[in-house]
Image (tube, rainbow, N blue to C red; front, side, top):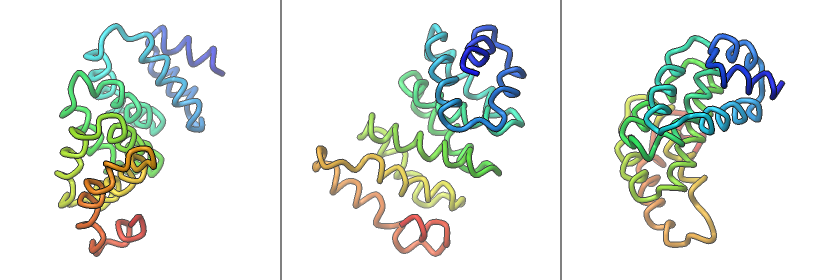
Length: 171
């Protein structure tokens, strides 16, 4: 299946890629994301590709868009987080989960700037977006980065009293 995914990515056949990723697990989608990134000439291409995939009907393509936001972040941090916040409100749970994981990976890799973006989501009307802040904080919390403890606690503290069951369960 990897060869077929690689061929679909290389030839930019999005419908073929959608068919191949239908029912695929996360490793297949991550493989497709790596291939898209490797074949992309510029990060700007990744922003456009991620936005295009986020508008597709097929959930695996929207999951792929979530993962591409990580690689597209250096070119446009604001755009990457805007797209992720939209994907966090997706109707399909795997898409929301992929977007939350991408938020965590961005927070881990770009701690200071990403922390500012996520802090802006504390009062977001969608509980799935607020939940993603909590999940991202767990990804970025490391024993090897004890200096992150206080900023992460300040980030998540307001969500500990959130009334939404989805947010409370993640806390």
